[in-house]
Length: 396
Ligand SMILES: [Mg+2]
Image 1 (tube, rainbow, N blue to C red):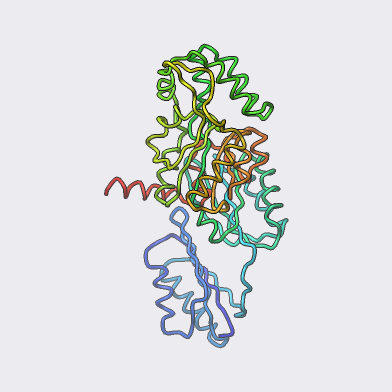
Image 2: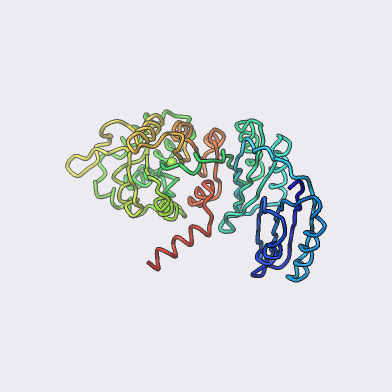
């Protein structure tokens, strides 16, 4: 077959359009080379690329137009030569998340892609609420790191989130997620709540702020803050755990990742005594956090064992990955603070979640929407898939 005919049908979606088109071609000398179909708000776009002998193009075209009239669709047919198409190289997925998603922002991002030699092959919507998320599948030979950096810079100005990832098997194979806890999985900074209980709120909040911006060594700042808790009754730990609020989407994220077969681990510069009860319903596989020393029912103002700081968080990621047999390239780390930076850098995909500017600037990807389950959209999981899985679970 030396020729092709591209048939594009569009119009109000109804059952049987694809069947009618292909059935009418059943006895012709054509082959299907490619097909794509898309439905947006009840409007169908169906594209079929047929391999056709050059002498048959006219007849096949007439059949396609006749079918289109019969099923009430608009039609366009484009004849061409049947040539071998080179495999697309350098395939990437660019996920764009907005709440809302302004057209001008999308225009700027797609312009940047085109300007750098990337071609958009396919566009898919993966969520329409509470955020709008779209994946652009693109191909090109240009450098991905440069594109990621350029799009990250633009996304900051445009107030949308953008993630650039290589397409292919590695992306599907990510099987370990390690998340920070304070201001990531939970909305609070537990140390601040403990400090309030100890009547040291202002002093500790000031140190926390400086530590999170990277202005103060984390281990030293932690020692200073824990020292301020000296004498606090142990019972305050359970009270603080009660007062903590999970971040919206945290349950959905953990539940869905477990269904996908992920190991879900937490690493915290906060305290095991708070993290464990707060996240007990999330089916977490491993937790590493600091531990507060208690003597005679009161905090001593000291930490037990090694402090989980910036280096400790990265080490936790590496240890979890080794223990669970997952290569680092297939890990995801999520965090918001300066002490998460090493872990975000070491992971296959580092996601800054509602992060401070210094963290956002250094991470592969950042999410600025306040829903933790938006991490799933970076993995290409759609809102519909999440809801279907939840519905199936309820009916089981
Ligand atoms: Mg944090």
